[in-house]
Amino acid sequence: MANHGYEGGRLDLPFVGISTFGKRPYQPDWAALDADVAILGAPFDAGTQWRAGARFGPRGVREASTLFSFGHAGAYDHEDDAVYLPGDVNIVDIGDADIVHTDTEQSHANIEAGVRAILDAGALPVVIGGDHSINIPCIRAFDGQGDIHILQIDAHLDFVDERHGVRHGHGNPMRRAAEQDYVTGLTQVGIRNVSSTAREGYDDARAMGSDIISVRQARKMGTLGVLAHVPEGARLYVTVDIDAFCPSIAPGTGTPSHGGFLYYEVLELLQAAAKRHEIVGIDLVEVAPDYDPTGSTSILAAQVLLNFLGFIFHARGARDI
Image (tube, rainbow, N blue to C red; front, side):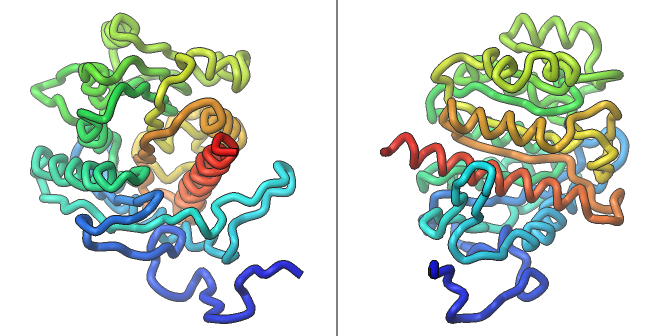
C-alpha cells in the first residue's frame, strides 16, 4: 500500500488551523525565503472604477484553498495519470504586502518589494489580488529578469493610458506593462462586450505588440490555436482576472461580464501554456468575495492556481528527464 503520510501526525482537516494558501508553511521573513513557489497577497482595491471589495480577495482565496489541502503526497489526476504538487514542490505563503489606504504609489511599491524578494530568492511569484492594478508593480519587479511575454486572461483589455490623471488604476495595467522594454508582447484572451478601454486603446494595444482574442474567437481557435499567438520559446508571465470567467460560475467580482469562459477552457489553456513555456510569474486578481455568498468564486480561484502550479512543476520535471 502506498505511503501517503496519513499514518502519523495530525489529520489537519481543511477547517482546522490557520488559512495560509493551501495550508502551506508561513514565511514572514522575506529575506530568508527558500522555496520553489512563494504566495504573496496584494489586498489593494483603490484602483477600481465601480464595485470595491477585491481587497478581501487574498483572504478569501486563501481560506478557499484549504479545501484542497487534503493529501500529504500530492494530488492524483486520473485523466492525466499524474501526481501534481508532490511533497518535493516547496510552496510557502509569505503573507501580504502592506497596503496604505488611499496611497496607490506606496501600496504598489510595497507589492513590488514583495515580488522582488521572491525573485531574488529564485522562487516563482504567485500574487493574489486585489484589483488588476496590482499587476503594475508585479511587472515592474521583473526589471532585470530578462524578456517576458504576458498572457492575460480577462474580460477587459485594461489598456487605458490615462483618464482624469489616473495612470495606475485597474484599467491601466496592460498599457503600463507594454511600456516596459523587457515585455516583448501581450496575448490578451477573453476580451469581450463593452470594455473599459476605448477604441483608440485597442489600436494602441495592437500597435504596441498585442494580440487580442475574444472568448468566441478563442473557442473557434481552440487551445493550441490561442497559444499559437504566443511566440515560441517566450518566457510567460500569466495574469488571470477572475472576470474572464462567466459570472454564472464566478459572480464574486467587481466588474462581471457575461459570456465568459467556463472552467475547463481556462484550465486547458493554462496546462498547455505550462507544457510549452517557462512560466516566470502569476497573478490572479479581482476576486471580491462579498459578492458571492456561496464562496464558489474564491474556490474557483484557488482551484485554478493550485492546478496551474501543478501543471508548471509537472512540466518542469518532464523537461528535466
